[in-house]
Image: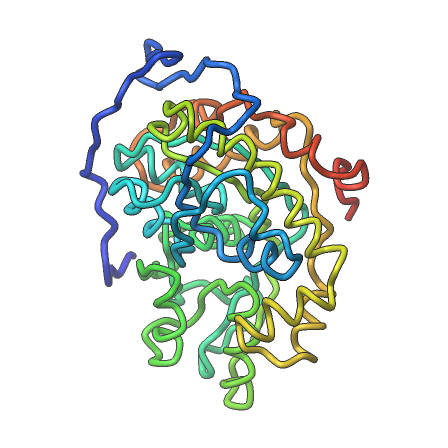
Length: 347
């Protein structure tokens, strides 16, 4: 059973603009073939929607030395919001989980993945409403679950149900955007929803004494991707800037890992408003960054996700996940970081 608070529309379409160095293959997917530029032209601008990168660059003193101008840093994080910004041309590059590019394709927004970071351990936990009576994932049967099919949280829910031996028909999926999860939990509109830090800590701090819990799920949201509209990658000046930003994105992430105290203060304490003690705990549970030189495993995981969400009735028919990746960028982030971060984290 599905209860819908806000259906995500799948009917919107946009025209695919073809430019030099681009072609459309027989499946209708835009192929980008021009070589990556090696120098950013003067006066090139990008609008970048990655708050964590902005804060890391600011905290590390590198924000003012970028080889291009950042016209804006929109504070968008939810995949559907980023897709809308891509559609309107107000964002040139963003970072999300692996599911938003799948959602984008289903809504007619042509965009490509240009950077890949891989996680091997779960980053989400299931936050329960105080009186939900959920202690393990086996207790989910019949429960109302906050579900955003176009976001990482939606994939976590579907993979959690698989791990529990359940199907979407065994629960009530309440479709919401992830920013609505907290309000829905607080109002007993849903029994459980996947939350990421620091939202999870904030919620448990407020409602833990009333019975709210954080239930462990084995579901891994494996991919963090950097992606951009195809139209941006067809613009030679913006392509050059995106090429450089892939490296900057990866290096900024490595800085946060290698400077945990500065990052805890700049992001978790000052920006996200958690206590220094909580920030330290959250930092201590973050997995070491891993930027793979080859994207084969990432594409395989993305294909599994495509098959999972389409098989569950979302986003149309299955398709070749490799078409979501611009493999000209493969290895670019990897080459920008020290060798330690090119190796998979061993669990």
